[in-house]
Length: 115
Image 1 (cartoon, rainbow, N blue to C red):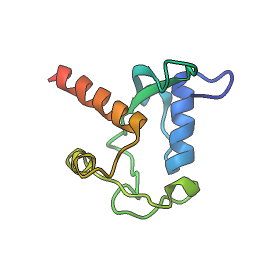
Image 2: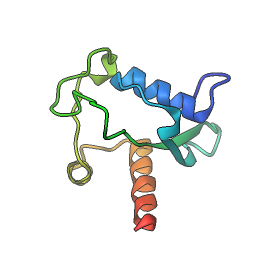
Image 3: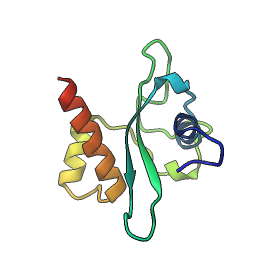
């Protein structure tokens, strides 16, 4: 769900910067799939994007749980977790948002196919 005139990659890069203060190049973004939150009345297209961070760059505060400088209010409960911790949070019922769950499943499926 982007702004008028933006490519999907531009939207993903902008959203990542707004949400985390991390700035990445559009080349590091792969669109895995387009989903629709409601295929009935609403047909909003939502891109599931995988963003690869460059190992040579310092992305602090990726380590730890401090909200990145420049990140917006939506990260008031910010914390980085690995895939195992994310799966555990799903199983405990802490992550219940349908779009998040769908995106995670798409990502998991894509990585399963690559192995």
